[in-house]
Each structure stands twice: as C-alpha cells, then as structure tokens.
Image (cartoon, rainbow, N blue to C red; front, top):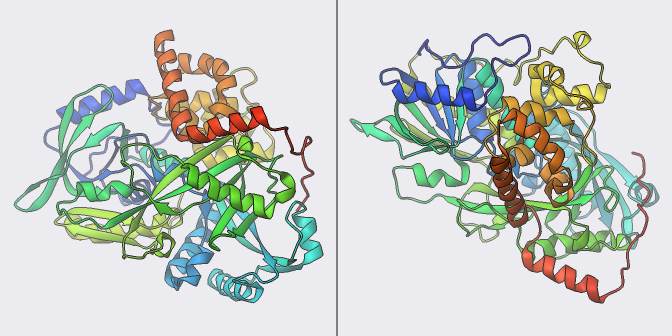
Length: 571
C-alpha cells in the first residue's frame, strides 16, 4: 500500500476538508498530469453506486484510491432508480433467496448506520377477488421475507380497513390487503455521500474525466490514460488494479469483445402528491401482465414505476421514457385509481435508468437475475450487475478479488459502520426543527454543520414544492464539484424531478446563488440554463408526441377531473 494520498486524511471539524470546486479541481488535475512516478493502488472507473461503494471501503483499508467518472457522479443508473433500499420481494418468486437475504441484511445495516439517509418505508399490497398471485401466496412470501429479516412485521387487513388506508383505490372486488416493511433513500445523495466522505478521509475523485481502455505491461494491467473533459489535457497514470465499475457501459472497457450485459430500462413518472396521494407505498399488480409496479411517496411527490424493457438506444445518450412506457404506467394507475381521473397532464416529471443486467438469455426481461458478477482480466477487474441496496457487499467481493494484486498486508474489515457516525455541534449552529436537521445529517454527514453556517438570509427555508433548503444549492455549488447546472438541479438536489418544467419558475433566484458560488458570468449562466432546460425537456419530461397529443386533447375536450385536492389519510 502507498502512504501517499491526495485527499485530506484529517477532516476539519466542519466535515469539509476544503471546497471541492473548480479551483481545487484545476490544482488537483495539474498534480495528476505531472505525477509520473507514484502508483495508485486502485483506479476506479465509474462514479455510480458501485464505484463509490468500492472507493469507500478501499479508503477505509488505507489504500491509495482514485475514482474517475466521465459524466457527473451518479449521472447514470444510480440517480434514476426507484429510490428503494429493499430486499426485493419479487426475487423470492424467481427463487433468488440468497440475493434477497443479502439485500435484506444490507437494508438493515443502512437503516441503522445511514443517519436517516435511508428511511423505513411501509408497503401495501391490495388483494382483489380472483387476483393471481393471491392473498395466501403473498402471505407466504412475506413470511419468508420477514424470516430473512429476523422479525415478523407484515400485517393483514380486511377490505373495510384497507379502503380507509387507501380511500381512492378501486373498491370493486377488493378483499383486503397486506403491509410489509422496506426502506427508501435519495439514490444520488447516497452516492455523493460515499464519494465525498471518502475524499474527506484521503481518497480522490474527479467527475468529467474520461478513461481510455486500461493499458497492460507483461500481460498485466499497468494503468490507464485519462482525459479532462472540462479543460482538456491528458494524464497517464499507473495503478496496481484498475476497476471497471461503469455499469451498463462495462463491456466497452473490457479486453474481450464478448458482450455479457443486457441493458434494461426502467422508467418512472412523477405526480404531485395531491393528485395521486401515496401516504404509504404500494405494490400494484399491472392488469396487463401482473408485473409489480410501485407507487411511492418521495420528497413530497408521488412516484410511479418502474418499467422493465430492453434498452437498445445509444448508452452515451441519456435514457428517456417512451410513449409506450408512459401508456403502460398510466394504465395501471387508471385501473386501480379510476376516481382520480388521472391523465398525462398530471405528470410533472419523469426519469429513466438503464440497469446493467447480466444476460442469461431469459425471454422476459423481468426474469433476468439481478446478481452481480466480477471478471478478472489480469488486474482489470470488471464488476457489474447487482442492486443499489447491495453496493457494500459488491465492494467487499471486488476487494477480495483485488487482494492478490495488492499484497498480503491488505485487510478487509466488514464491521465498521457504512458511514461515519459523528455529528456537527448542533448547539453551535442556528436552531432547526429536528426533521430538517436529520435530513441534512443523512445527506451530508458531518459536513451538514458547514452547510448550515454558509446560509444566506432566508436560505434555511425550504424551496416551495420540495423538501430542499435553499442553502443546499449554495453549499453543493460551492463544495461538491458542480460543473454544470444539471449537476446541481438533477443530482446534488432533486429540484428538476420535483417541480414543473424542472423548476423553471425559480431559476432567477437560483441564478443569484449560482453565479456567485461558481463565478459564472451572464453569458455562462444563459448557456447553462438553456442546456439544462433542453436536457430536462428531452429526458425528464414526457415524450414530445405525448405532450402534443395532450395539448390537442385539452383544446378539444372539456376538463373532467377533480377540481380540489383529495383528502390524504393518516397512516
């Protein structure tokens, strides 16, 4: 192992180290480009949940680690998941008991050790007359699910009680339902906390850096050539191990031409909570194919998803929901909540992610296993597949494979908490309500203290329509390697997923913050704003043909929908 590390090994009391901004980035890239002799223990290519998890554990082991990402951290699948940290009840049906067991174990650890970044989420399943699978099948599955979690938590309700819990659910044929426990997170903030906490403890990470295929010497991996996509320039770095953690892109960096991955797209629709109330999460069986579809409360909105279809588009282009997927998701919500009269006009945003599923030749995409795999090509270790929930287990499996290249003195310790457990000195900070304080702690860890201290007037208030504080925009722009406006509004915060038109109405106030923190002049802001709104229109809205169709329908048909918000029941 090397003693030379590029991050700070002694974080400041604020949890910050220094601001990881454009000035820091320029200095650090200069060091990389001129550093000819030192060898990295690990260079990780890919800044999603898999790469971030490996970085976190490798830094904990004292290794010299560099992570690079060709777009932004969590740009790909890791910011476009269903936001669930779960065992995967449906995997039991496919016989993947070990995968479910591992995921439940990791879910329980994250609930305990994430400082509220991962939170409990109760799920409901309705039971209708003639439904397949029926009540007893679900009860058997939930009993096994509970046994794997070492606690019996699921509940059974009769029809009248279930109607009160979900008053807008179609009552015809309803015979009752069940409730079980899982968990939820902000997937992008999960990745970012892993990355920035690792940097505070000595690791190094850069976004917007593209890696070429690794180079080999004497048939063993020797390093990789990197290209700075922001300012230009290249750096040839040496490494004992190169990790390919690029998810759906993994086949492109391997030495072999063999294609092992089957990219599958999962898409989601976002609704205002008042139009589609979701006081608790629901698993709904689609009337067309009996696939489970989730209705989830998230960040003050309601999320419906996901689809599971082959993704045949260019992986370098952001994934987008298709008209067929929108119709599929609208079909299930209209069938189960007919009285709400929901239409595509109610959708405020969408997102689509591409899962890196290892192909086993299943005809039905949903039948493909979500297990992960690791391939070793003489020190080029490729890891792909898996689930958001099991990132920590994937990291340990990868590092175990890497040990033969790193030396016998490398020790893997699976016992320390996933995240640091220390907190800011709350008494020295402006007072905040406990839920807001806990939310900041989960998302930013020890750096929450520095975040609160940098707040301007009224910036400790929430942005209307979200649970995000204005100061989060200031802090993340200042300190979290924000290079473009979409980094800030789609991943550092999730404003672009929660507000109509990606938050267009509040861009003038965001501009005041961003131009100061990122030192953008008017021309740069206008360029970034136009680019962001185009990204949102193409990839986070509805397909253009559906928007045109909805506009045409609105012009020719009278409005027939609830004029007032429905009553949202208490749990």
